[in-house]
Image 1 (cartoon, rainbow, N blue to C red):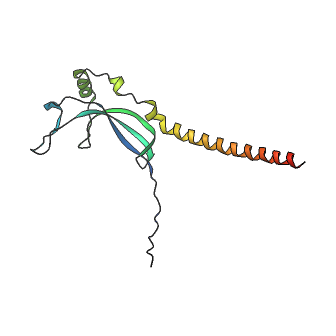
Image 2 (cartoon, one colour):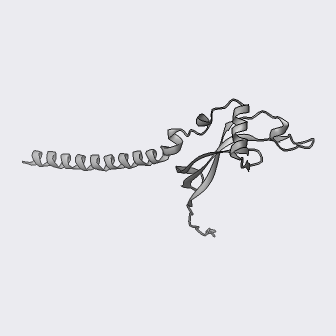
Image 3 (cartoon, rainbow, N blue to C red):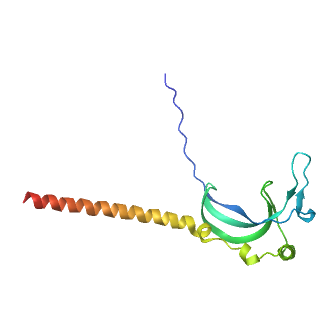
Length: 148
């Protein structure tokens, strides 16, 4: 006999979530140490990242950035965010000779890329439907001309 599996509904969640992108690798010095490693694991140090609130599907397909970027301390291996005061952040930026405006910039693709991609897909669909209608009208006219 055949074994029938129960069909489950695919759940697509569209929601807001926090996204982190590393923008500056800080030196591995004791002042940026987050977690001391034992003999098997290395020490974990803080780096600078931008935190944005994005809206997307299943946290895999971001659609747009809901709130602007904010600089935070971040460790990718531990998935740990460190909120920094404005004075502490300015001190880190000046010590490491970084440009704050350049760190806070988000490229156009990340900010609006998927909206442009969806718009392009809709445009292609409209053109394909329109082309199909024009083609069917032109073949009908040719058929009528031949039968006369």
